[in-house]
Image (cartoon, rainbow, N blue to C red):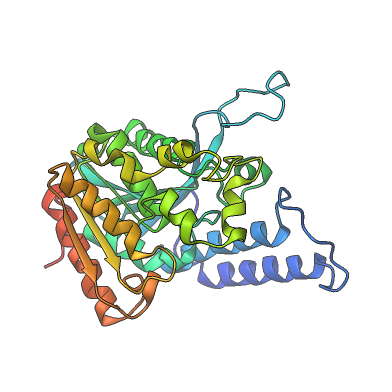
Length: 346
């Protein structure tokens, strides 16, 4: 396994700097650099991902065995040439894994599926403090780079399927972990994410309630029809692009509803905590309120908290402030009631 050695800090820093400067040396000046086509992976995306991969060692090697693995999921939702060579092949999904050091693997451990956010983003080093907090409690963590994620080349980047098969990619990561590690307790599997990661979390527990023991959705995208109504034309164009949904919400409202968590409120069976913030500049609180109202109308048992103008807006409980730390402690205490990590917060 990689990312497990000790006493490597100086070598890692040197390698990070060498990788960064090599990329910069190859990059043409901005004035002469051609504009990157939307379907073309950017060199800086892959360079950034390589640097991030190395930084994970620096941040977490003291407490975790870290690896980057890959597994297969469903084929692309849209095939450019359905009869061409390789058409219908499963998509290969990368994922990061973190196993706490020093725990007795003879005893079953809980698994946390940590889902990154962003319409097209990736699992970045900015989540290191959250991974550390989970690992310190004794969770094994898997963080899938579902289709649409950046830094892994064209095949993954351009097969974005927001609200669709990306949900299956995350479920497949959960299944991979249970099939691979015999020290994972299948009755103690959690899933959590913020923003778009919160949306995928919701879709997973609504559509596969048997797969998860507890869930947390922070500032989750909840209603794509409402979302398209208050977002800009450039944002809506991402979804109506030919390689994506292919139509606007006006042209195919049912497809946008099919990809929205609010549509599946009646299916909730998993213990769930939802957080939102009234001054969120990305996911308007109206979306999450619609989800909360839908769950209440269905008579579902769940927990939620609407923060009033919490500093940080969309990022309010992912920062390093006192309020953010207290909010995350709320999350961890909720999850621990169902997942019983070996070293829960006190």
